[in-house]
Length: 301
Image 1 (cartoon, rainbow, N blue to C red):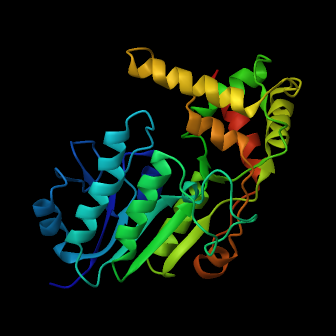
Image 2 (cartoon, rainbow, N blue to C red; image 1 turned 90 degrees about the vertical axis):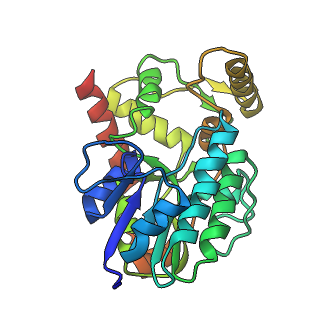
């Protein structure tokens, strides 16, 4: 059977939905979602092998970022990836959405690149790195280590904008750390390009700004003073750990986890020159993206 079709997992998610709109790949879903041409599957090995018989490319985005549920994260990020790779035709290309978290919170070098030592230091990071190794065993693969996504679909950031607007946001640490945000559309462009270009591993992250700079831009757009109060990083992480512990005892699910705090608090910057050259990756200015997010936040109030 000739390999002619492209399939996508995770199409009901925020990155997956954006990639679906760009590529027109056939979405695989667990239950009816109303997506055009969707295929409903239990993602068992048997069903995946049957579905992928004519697959020329599989875009694998499905996974879990719920760090409060380690077992579910292992199944969604590692075991599902294993079943998908095992079901691929030999010549089929797989484009896998990984994460810069595999480098750890403290980078071995700054800026980090595809050649930088990986140091996964959380359950989420380890699950993505384990999945990467599974994907890398397939001959025709592209692994995209994507930075911290943002965009209008990511309305959880509106909690931060709300805290800035109300004067309740604190700078974690001294605020000089850089944050590797990347707009969801720019990341989706890289995924679409990887369907036919490149091979191997690529870092996909925007030009970083510091934590203080990001808050200052947002505050300016919201017409309020920029956050000035600070909280030590260790204390913010400790509070997040306490809330996660309370959740496992039957409490409310925390809006900020240790992983969220780490994204905001640690200094991380990346060299994306390989993706620029081979995938045509061209991220928008983070300042422009923050302004657009703030405008959308104000329009939704």
